[in-house]
Length: 329
Image (cartoon, rainbow, N blue to C red):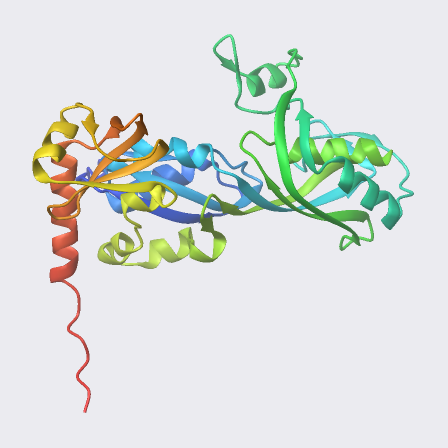
């Protein structure tokens, strides 16, 4: 008879961990793994990466989950490899091959198609996606062999670099670098590029190298995270405010901060601003987000007093555990 597993003692953890998601893992699987490693009470990710994709996946803990939508809405950057001449049922290497075509593509063809797919475009979401129809994910219909009508969506490809290459088994391919707006499916972009080239294509590799202001160079791998001590893992966390780096900062005195935290609008000589990060002058604590309209600071997502105190305690604990500066001669 197997002994019962020891129960993990959860604790409040607040911040953002930039994970380099490994291949073969779903976004939720790595989230649950890291949540367990940190013993965190509350966690959420900022948009899924397919199991066959690797790269930047910001994981939010505690109060940071209140602002995870900002990363869902952020622009993304990808590196991808597009296998030409072969279509699959899913648009990537995970699906079954459904069509083979000859490939006769020149660099001039690639340049033409690059221009065609740069800028504002329309894209029909793939069946193998988590988008919902009547409360059920599209991939559930796809696995049942049911095709569901989907409306094309407007999105923007800000940057598209493509060049012809060969894979390791002498198959013609295209290496791609894509910077795009939210809601872009690189699998679908690859399929559309293949159709525009007249040979069909599927995505054979995908890596997300950036989301919003975060890049792959800032990320930690799951393997390294597992090898760390618990304190080392906590030290990898970025502050909650790192999600608000592009927000205008407004600082309130203690009286106005208390009123703002109770949901009341505050008046001041502020210009109209859509995204504001609000801090208290006492302790420089993050209070939440807001927007300014007609001189009024209007509360958005607010931290709770308990979260603010816990973050302050974490900060004080981190400072108290910091090593003494080295002595110099």
